[in-house]
Length: 297
Image (spheres, rainbow, N blue to C red):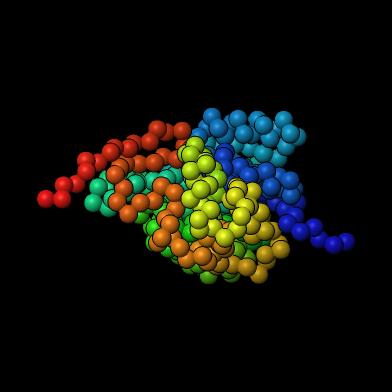
């Protein structure tokens, strides 16, 4: 019998940042492909609601929710343990949790905001790999770890400074972890989304973002969470069994067009007139202050 492309039958996955956007779309695809899924997210209201919706669609025996701050090691350990205790093993980890992070001119960035950005988006990936790999090694049958990076990791003007730096770290962590974990038959890859229409990206300004993107994205499609989820499902499945240590662009040709310097991404400015912290979809309010215009004198 021919193997079904993208099948995850009998696998168990953990998805961080799984209550909305790319994480939620991936959870839906994983479940449809036969996997059991543990959804981790800091936004507990959104997480419980999403799992309730999935249960109403018939997945009640295959999905769990666990509140998690991915920057806290004990909470990440507990998240992986849910997969092992409720479903018997762990085969897939999608380290997807993220925030907008520290924003503003480098001279105005708050050090605590910088550290918090790295705690969630770099340390969080490190902890997901560390404890996901441990669980996979205990099971002894290998596995697949996928990390969400960004086109901001591969270019200037692809995102705010702190955000871009964390994503560049994710790309390098991915390569090094792939080499180290290969002997355990654990593959590690990253995805670099382009402009994907999630709440974190457009913040309600959908039409404005679409007009900017049309100037520089070769593909006429609007980037949707499902486009990233399809790549993640491929990397999670045995169809990518010989793929490890890679960074997969899923950006509608954005970087290939090479025009970020002329038309930066929505919300990215050479001289932002604001600074603060964007907590994304965590449920926490953003901390933004507007800057006084600089005098030419």
